[in-house]
Every structure is written in C-alpha cells, then in structure tokens.
Image (cartoon, rainbow, N blue to C red; front, side, top):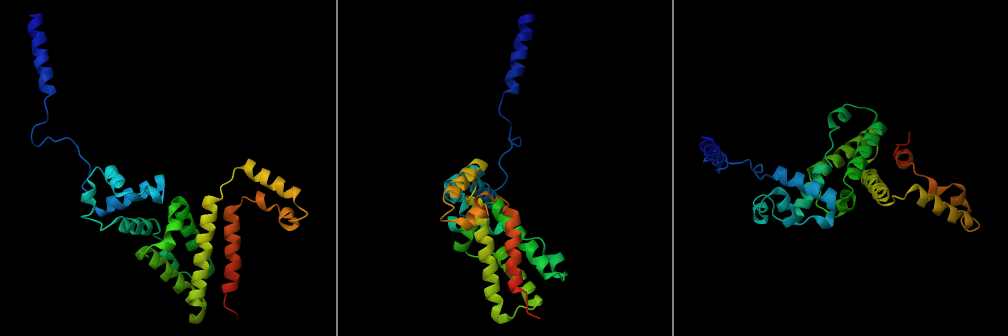
Length: 232
C-alpha cells in the first residue's frame, strides 16, 4: 500500500510538472511600444551614458529582437531625440501662465531644467547636438513669452534666450563633471595657497573650496536677470 501511495504521489508530481496547456501561457514581457522603448532607453542612458546606448543592448533590455524596435523608431538617432525630449518635459505651465512674477517664473523653470539634466547627466551634453523636440520647444516658447511679457524688446529676445540657455547648460555640465571629494578640493586649495603670489585673488576667495553649487547657480542667475530686466 505504501508503494502504491508513493506511485500515486509520483504521478501527481508528474502532472504538476507538465507544461501549461493552451491558454495558460506563463507571463511574458509587456507589448513593445514607443513609450516602453523611450523609458528603457532613458534607463540605459542613465546607467551607461551616451556611448552605452546600442540598439541591440536596448532590445535585450526590452526582451525583444533588435529588428522589432524599427517598427517603432527609424534609428538610434531617433531614440536619442525621444529620450532627451522625454526627460526635459516641464510641468509648470498652468501656474506660470497665470503668474506676474516673471523673475520667479524664470528661476523656477531654469532651476527645474537644471535639476532634470542633473538627474540625467547625459542630457546636457546631448542637447546642443540633437533635434529639439516638443518638450524643449515648449520650454523655449514659454521662456520667450515670459521675457516678452516682462518687457524685453523683440530685438533683444533671442540674445536673452540664448544667454539663459548657455548659462543653464554650462552650469549643469560643470556641476556634473567637476565632482571632487572634500579631500581633493582641500588639496587643490592648499596647492593654490602655495602659489598665492601668482593667484592672490582666487586664493583669497577660497575658490576651490566653494562647493555651494545650488547657491552659485541661483546667484549667477540673479546676475543675469538683473541685466535682462527692462530699463524703466
């Protein structure tokens, strides 16, 4: 009897181990879509940078074949454009349109822009080389409207926009790449102290020990906005 029970249990175990019948397929990857491709491309860029984005590697992350991607995107260059635009979406439009604090609006928008690029450090160096997508163009349109409503003349509008663009991208690239440890900064400042006869001003200001990136960004932006403020 014990042997029969053991045999029955063995048969039962065999039934439990059989492949699922039709209609009982195991879970699979979600369907491939443009949204999934873009989101996964952003993850890959965050992890491995611009050089790490390859269509085969992206397909592997998505659990699909590389050729399947081309049903949704024409090329790797298109993936770059879509990924970049997706991380630079700005959601402050409704509040800003109703606001009359033009300086506060610009500080908020550019601070958000910088924060977005710092979360995705590859984006700042990629932005000047890519096709501008709808999210970036919307930022520039909103920035233009704010400056124009504040009284910046049409003849000066492009200069104002590019000045702010250059400031944000330059500040972001510097912050993302100039990431020294406290010990490294202290050693550099000590070396500068030894050379103070040649560089007295930056040694006195303790330039290489200044690590207030956020404060420097905001104050530098205030300097720029002071210059852009319409003359009354």
